[in-house]
Image 1: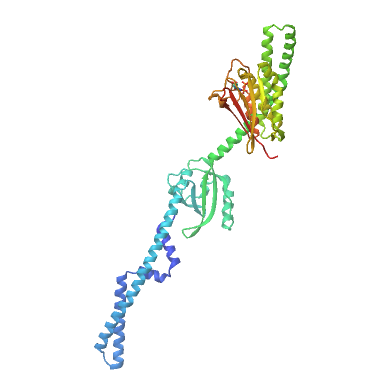
Image 2: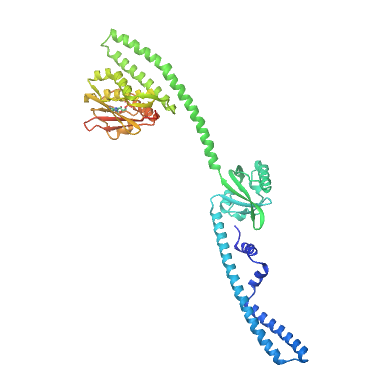
Length: 451
Ligand code: ADP
């Protein structure tokens, strides 16, 4: 910030007494000749006085010896002094170089800083770096030097800034504040300012570091707005979910029950079968959508100690009619209790996987359930021998409404999304692999949790 010259003077005053400094700047040859001539004159005068006192006349011999003597003494003394001066100059030069180097380094650093740096004294800007100039819309820093800081600070903040300066002058440390500046073109910008008192060019001043936070403020405002919108949308979604569950499920249930009665009477009527099938589909869809929507708004589930073996057994029991209808057998190889901390909703995971196996893998004729206890988790597999799932579909099927048509089997495309969400809420994993014997293996890995 400061030029090299100003810094030099300050430094010397700190190191050497001023007389030596002045000596250090004397031209060395002048020094030699002046000291030789002065000592010659002095010795000559002294010898003349001496010879007059002692001999009553001027003794030229004594004068000559004295002058030669003085010449050598002056030469030796001035050589020593010259040696000292050269040495002092060397030390001074090195110190000066170091100071200039460090000042240059700091100057460059400040000039390169992406944030604005300004020094002001008595309300006037005395230094500003290029980033600071750019922030205010000046072409060069010089355009701002000499201006009042209150031309830059927004009028709403004049009082605050005055108060901060007063507190800093009283020795208080003030925290950074967010305020507003006015650029040279009249635009209002949001800034964050950190300030501290400093000594600049030998006099007290204030150093301010200014960061443009207009963009951050804009993003914060946008985020707040989005959050509000999101909350509104969420409330709307909850309302819609309630409407789905209560107001749609009831009439569809009535349609299904009425159709069931009609089918008892007219079992061969195709139209009634179509109504029945679609009413069932609608009920499944409403129930699944409501379930998923609820699960998505939940962040955590209450957990209790459960035996996964029992959970799987219950799911098998519930889906047995489906397997019988599909002509499939279920082979449960779980033999040991598998204790885990989980929410009873995990049963839904196995209900879905087993229902899918019955729906999509009937051709395989059987489904195998097995498990593995790992270090901190339990892995359960549901293996079928059906058509399998292609590599492109393996991830996609876990997303909501992603279905792959398998010979007209009906579904909502929500089952595996529900599975995934429940497993995620237990910090577990679910994935599908190819069954080497043909078909698919669905794996569910759940952490055991502390018991
Ligand atoms: P839905 O069964 O309602 O279509 P899911 O999310 O349960 O929805 O399944 C998504 C898709 O994954 C299904 O459409 C089906 O193509 C495929 N799928 C699921 N389980 C199996 C399986 N055991 N074998 C073959 N394909 C399956």
